[in-house]
Image 1 (cartoon, one colour):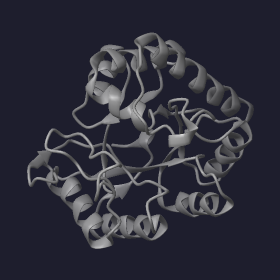
Image 2: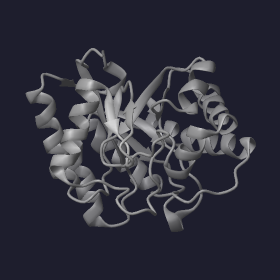
Image 3: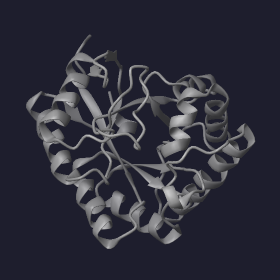
Amino acid sequence: MTRLRSIDLNCDVGEAPTPEQRDVEARLMPYVTSVNIACGVHAGDAALMRSTIQLARQYDLAIGAHPGLPDRESRGRRELPLSQGFVLDVILSQVSELLAIGQTEGVRLSHVKPHGALYNMAAGDPELADAVAAGIAQLNRGLILIGLAGSELLTAGTAHGLAVASEAFVDRAYQADGRLVPRTEAHAVIHDEPTLVARAHSLLHEGTITAVDGTCLHFDVDTLCLHGDTPDAVRLAHALRTMCADGGISVRRLDHAD
């Protein structure tokens, strides 16, 4: 595999329940190139959406919507019974709201990345993935759909005429089938710096990452995600940027990647 020349680094933001976590999100922004803003349902509200857009604009970041399930208790991470119609409504209502706020702030949204359980369920379910992609296409065919590498989300996005971006997670463990290890399981979240950097290096230079059972997974990736609620997220983001610079890989926002 040819080594990547550039990569997008994205982070989920606008979810912070406390001032301390909001400070972490703000300190992450200099290290990432794209942000995915919670749309006020699984987390956040209109005021936080607006202030997060304003902050991201200061750093010239690609700004996207991060719609999730209406379950604040689990922060949108609990799988619920879903229909195609419900998922379509989730996408239309939440992305529309962020689009409207972005318009008042003079900001054009670049992408949509479903959140949490919605992301994981749509990644493996063609019907739910189709509903996600259909909603985005109905709102704006210029929006990029971010989906798990090798997942149904990417297939559905392409079928609906959307540009898609293949995502990998450097701070989450993988199962042998390419899906993420559920957060309810031990070691699902990775926050050891050498391990995280080594995983990112392997993805960028070899196109591979190792699953929890030792399976070598092969991914073509356009963007890497680092979660803001991962312990020591700012330090880890700095380490990722340093690794990219040392390896000759430019870090560029999603809508301007090579």
